[in-house]
Length: 79
Image 1 (cartoon, rainbow, N blue to C red):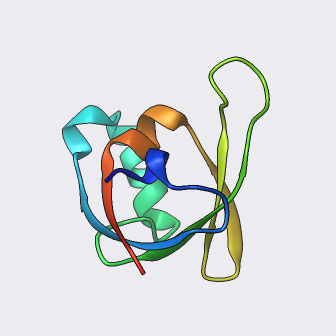
Image 2 (cartoon, rainbow, N blue to C red):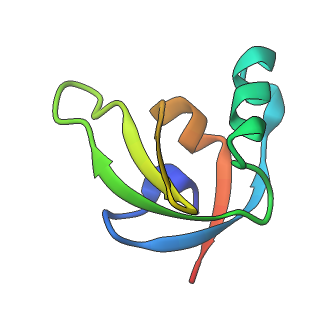
């Protein structure tokens, strides 16, 4: 399952990230925010227009906005 497929409030752990699907500068920013393999994450909110971008995720005590395309590149396991 990908991060994009989680429902609001569901918690998960990132199992893998297909970094080649993410622009290098975006990947660097995501890693700096702690979004990498092993991170525990939850969906807080989804955008309401069009493609439902962005997705707000909780990681630690932070809320971070991710593009749906980035979330689709992350494989997660539900906790």
